[in-house]
Image (cartoon, rainbow, N blue to C red; front, side):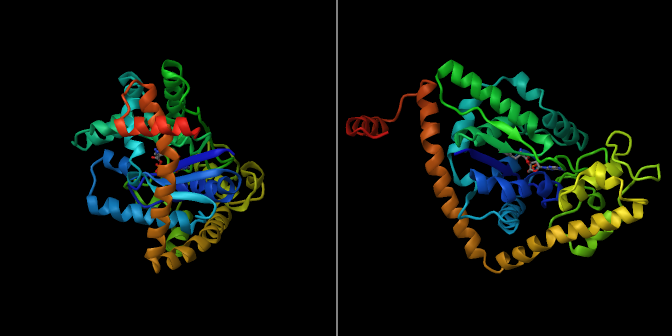
Length: 347
Ligand code: TYM
């Protein structure tokens, strides 16, 4: 069965971009057709200046929202990255396979490091090595597919390179994964600046629809979205990024095609109104379920505990195999177990 792995980073409140670009694909498609693991990647949230209490709060909130969006623990595994040591354990080995040049070429590193320096802050080393940890997340679970929005494809490409290099040097150990993306809305843009991505760590609230915004706030943000200088509604991401963004959001929520939808509208106002209602209708079940789950925090805790146990059991053999392949001496007890398992004909 195809194995799917993806993750979400608790660095801010989840956005409509996270939902349409990733979460929705996970819960409507991936968990039904694949052996799927979805992870709140909390270690990644430590790569930039952070408040420990906020990271904890956002991690719980991201897990709750993932379940509210429809992740079903009967169908998939939901867990928190730091609960499964294998991710960090494998990351170090992959650092010994990656090069610093590769890391410095990562677009997200360049952008985030520049932003951090502009603020007068310092850049954490973990921001540079972050894509290696992401590769470890994926490779530890032998994922075949990684459903992500556009902004993560470069990281998945790097993961492929590292897997191939490791396999070539040390023997076949890892599955080489590939990125998958939703047909529309793989890059939802900021409503106030449609040339930049709607990002959860950005500061500009009015251009970002957060999943937990109130319905009227969602409507207001969409009605105030920046459109383009023309008047007619056409789908042209290059020349009309504002309108194209709205059409993509509408297409994602209603199942249509952005270009064909554009032909149905004679004014920006009518388009915005329909986009606002489509988004509210799409998010309403998520809000309802989120409210229920918040009233039962014990359930979320149990899902995460069981998910971590399953994820640990899945990742352990692969990460152990990587340790052996790269030349590390197995601990004695493991060696004894390995010998007795081999004698018993296990594996
Ligand atoms: P993160 O937390 O930034 O985003 C989670 C997912 O949401 C997608 N996404 C978007 N899609 C469309 N439009 C947008 N505006 C938008 N903003 C975000 C992202 O592409 C992503 O799929 N490095 C990852 C987390 C990660 C991961 C992994 C993902 C860590 N390890 C292993 C997959 C596999 C990140 O920062 O995602």
